[in-house]
Image 1 (cartoon, one colour):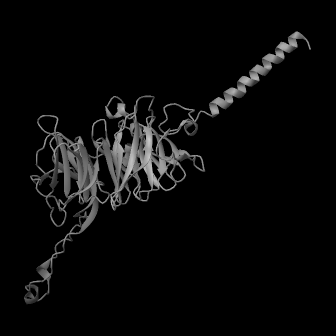
Image 2 (tube, rainbow, N blue to C red):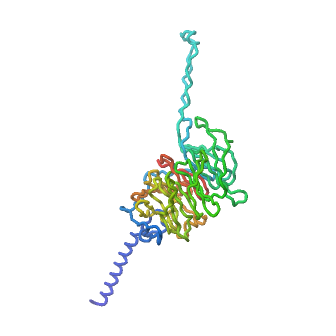
Image 3 (cartoon, helix red, strand yellow):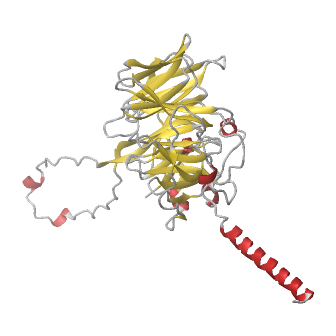
Length: 452
């Protein structure tokens, strides 16, 4: 073979190899919801547990690879809208009776009585016809607390008719929780020294029997809990709260019935930095406050025997969200990679989604989650920078099947004509799972997404 032909053959082989490598590279460049860059193999790179006193869960990839697809029937112009006209501190969705809209019927023309042959004695008799009572219906309503004034407002999900419900002024409410079908409210704010946390538990006035609007000057009456309560969570049946406060060198955990105000101590610990969650009436979860720099741990408190057991550990940036049935834990780490841990099998699955558990909500059957998923997360010290407000996300709303990992894009708020970039928090579903509600962390306004 001549030297010229040899050189030509070598060049040809190099070109063929470059084409093959280029083809493989670009076809492997797939991106899941919330990934900051394409081509990351989360299953091979993710090892959240390291050394721990708890048996490390086995990372099991889904039996079928996750499929991410848009919703072909998505009509974001109608389905997504802002509810509140002001920043809010908390909200609740509940069923409320209201007058039913009925079509206006035009009355028939008057009868000419000049030629009537009716007996005047008969026509003069009074009829005993009873008036027809107004028609009513039960509809999904919302109550929320104005962050600036502490006033409670309410409206309906299908008809935005925002009206003030109370006039009790408590400035600068940072957190609000509703219970007892919206009849109780917990307000958290700082005292005048801007250091002491005050927690007020109030009862809202009753409405009229038909669920009509009452005066705007209603007052909230209630009691104060101990100062500097570190954390509060609402029970799944929204009739009780669990709160943590320091007493001496220990942290005390107490439950309180919102209707009767009866209290019971259920937890005590020498460690004070906890985040609680109350997924069902059998258990409360306690997770150490997260930071990307140190490992976090999660425990389950059995409310029957008051036993405390560790279920997750040695995960930097650990945040959690337990399913309603108490069998699954949605958890994230300092890379905002989302996984599901099974408490029975002690194994976990990666979902291939980049977001935080507190940007998600479980469906009531524990088979689906709805999440606000950032389009881009980048590399940073999560979740610290997000909590501190140094990083803000632009989210899409995804529905994720926990069983097979398949995900469907429900909404992209930033692409709606006249829409906004949303960093979703405090996600909640109504009882019928027809609406998804959330707060935009950027400005604390309340939004709703019609899932029907």
